[in-house]
Length: 190
Image 1 (cartoon, rainbow, N blue to C red):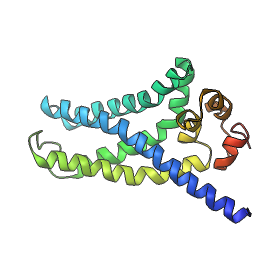
Image 2: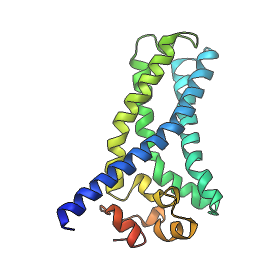
Image 3: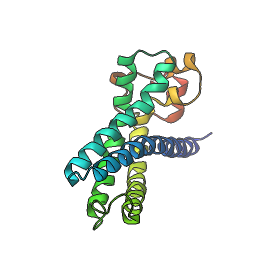
Image 4: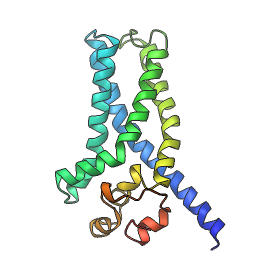
């Protein structure tokens, strides 16, 4: 294959991995966001208190969805937590800023109440917008060997032995772009 074809394959692979990373992020964020919004709204909390709870729960569940499989594969809690922090922090942060910004911007969304369709429609819309903004961020991070690229081998279904050899530690991730195939062919290092 020529360099142009390799670059196109790497770009397509980065977009696919970015999509998977964003769906993963959306899952954790949606669990935390919905739970936080429901609790805060039902309790009659202020917008600020509700958003703070939602963001805290989104980070908790986002990290939990990354840490749990790593623990099942035999990694220690400290190592799994470091990988989750390196893999998910930027993605969750972007998703939460956008999601909560949209919720706060939609007139009446925060005070609509759980029985009101405006609340649920606004929440669904805010998560969709957050997804659309976060996907290119994840692709950008992955193309630089950051973000979900750090944990990809562990979630990629390549087996525990292969995973340990292919995923660099968070502090060993290169500071330049690592082509997708290079991360698998060379132990995560160019």
